[in-house]
Image 1 (spheres, one colour):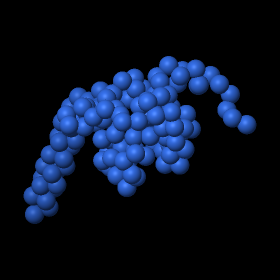
Image 2 (cartoon, rainbow, N blue to C red):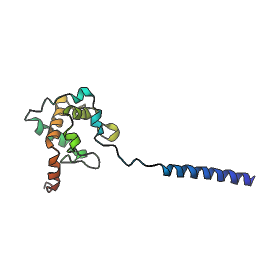
Image 3 (spheres, rainbow, N blue to C red):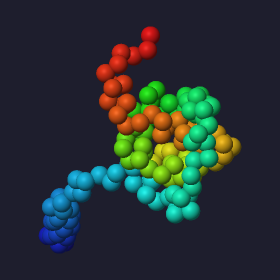
Image 4 (cartoon, one colour):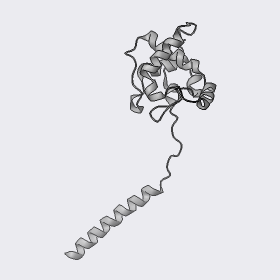
Length: 150
């Protein structure tokens, strides 16, 4: 009886060890998916939307206020990104169609921590898009070298 139990336990241990070793041999996916891939998922209807506030001189300052209130906590003071959220100065965001950025703002990426901002009125969401895309990708490099605000 003891021999059968020992053989059974040994077989169980061997099987578990074999599965563990097999799992260790699988190659890991070392290429992380781009955090900006969600922009490509915007439906064509949204991607084609033009920013109605692109020529509105008040849109950028109003968007800055909204950004400071709603976005800065995660994306950082200069939109350069933090551990919580990616940089909005990245080329992927700056060159994305305004409608795609608007779609992300409206629908969020909840599984990645980006909240849904559909509660903001549509003009305010467009102000945010206008502000973010006014920052430009090259300014990010220059601002990193600036001393912090006093």
